[in-house]
Image (cartoon, rainbow, N blue to C red):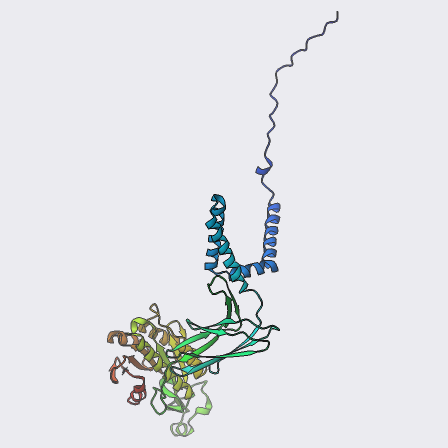
Length: 439
């Protein structure tokens, strides 16, 4: 009988390692794969956004008004609840809401080809002057255009015109008038055509014209023949600074090396036996600096600010007419004054600001920013006290003639001296020429 030998047990050894399985999802992806994925996602999103279908869809989604979205959401909710619980009334309401949106969308279907011309004969007017404009709308499509609604934004308001149906190449003209009772820059346009349903569920707008600006200039008065604060000297205004070459003769002094020999006074040199040269006073052209405060705390009311703006604008326009050097400052910037019209345009843009510099800070900025000014005019309102005015006046040098125009509506014209400066109390713009003549 065959005997099978029993296996001999192997000596004990270290246990075999247990394999560890890491899920594929938890393994970190290589950085390059992530970058390629993000790049591809961005490219796909950009292609979708640039596609014509996406633009068309967004355009149609945009024509649905908030009320239309509300009706659509209510219809979907009624349909869902009615279908779930078998309420016929809610299903009927859902169908009615959907039908309303469908019928409303029909009013926005179709392309409208208008040629719109906005005509503004005058882009600059004074307060109270008539500012008329006109619209010319031509149907440039080969089909008859349905009636529509034209909207023309005018400043903060909106002018609405009913545009009748137009056959091919027909032209409809519509006039309008812009109110100009206040100084302002009035934005007119763009012209919009609007089509939609009567309930306001759907509305489609198209813009046809750019925005135009109408400048309503402040009131000004002519200061011709009045002393507008300038020193009328054709040779310039002499100063206490001495120069070796100028127009205003001052004295003679002994010649030193480097002096121009053309200025040697030969008669005096021959009499005293040594060279003597002429010495001159430096002259400079009159330079008017106007500092106009726009801080609301410097004025009792808005009318005082308007009076101050009109006074500053009148002085500035007169300076440009006389071809004088001019600088007009308001808190934060200088007004452009290449021409009188440009200066008045910038005056129309002035707005009151509670956080703007006060008259004292503005005077400091004027003295530093216009160091060659010969005449400085400060325009402010009645709340500015004498101490504040004195502090503003002291910012200027002794060679600068300072004039303060203190505006207070309804007061009589007054004139006084304060801190070496002239203070003109102005209650009416028409009194400004007479007040300047008394200086």
